[in-house]
Length: 390
Image (tube, rainbow, N blue to C red):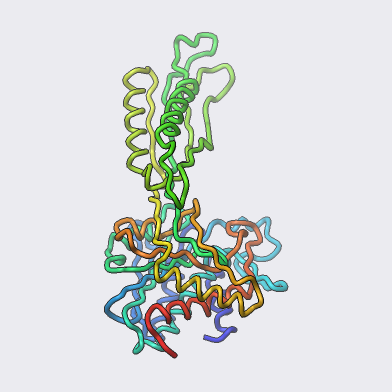
């Protein structure tokens, strides 16, 4: 695929409105490209919504199996604040603008092009490259979870995720809980508080106990790569008016999780504290979990990571830039958090893709040269890993 065709592919992907859904149109489009090229692929609709789907494609056969992953959804475009049409790729100077150019339709497009390249050299491939194109990464990761449950990570020894790392490699990501705590009290006039049960006061008391316990028990349980647990109460709602005892209140908590103080441990603390509170108070507390992501730490010295770093540094040097591709551990999560949940601990995990800090922002942008770089780098990385020699 030449440069103009690569630009056209990105333009087409951006033009699809996949704001937190509607991924099947993209999956069908990519399936058509692969079908024309003779690449084995299938569209897998999500069970609860026919407009949402994953796509799986393979080139090669046998072992080793390397998976490459990109997602098709984006966050909301927030069109009012844009200087250009967010669903039309617009070039201005060295930048291209459009919703998803950074997160992560450029990365997905570059992986599609890599699969087409691999098909042209299929007879030389030693093993299988499996493309996992997912729905719903931005909210809940149902696509990645479905692919893992359907067995598409079985036998995979290395996972490359094309999320926007820029010229850096991420090999470890924290887990995450988004938890909503609800307190049920009893309404009364504020002049007679003894007739009611103040949900706000009870929720504050519960959160104080919960926060203190989590911070105390997580202390010192740090991961050498990811650091420690991060716990924040970010949203609080309670009361309707100043002269009424509030009958309900809620809070939303975000927790960034490390393997040493994991999801199950945190959930156990919540269960214990809820039980204790409800046994000793007239108010009733409950909680629900929204985002539930497990931390993932890949081996820093994995073959895939080393090849990606070497290829990246070569490209930077050729452009006269500082030839350094750092290896990082970050708080953010990717589809890898769901895909790797049952994989062996030595499975390589490499996040490496085109993008910058404009992800999720109005006027999201990407340097044109970075998109072109990653098209070339993905091909070189996979060629080296799969033993292809030109």
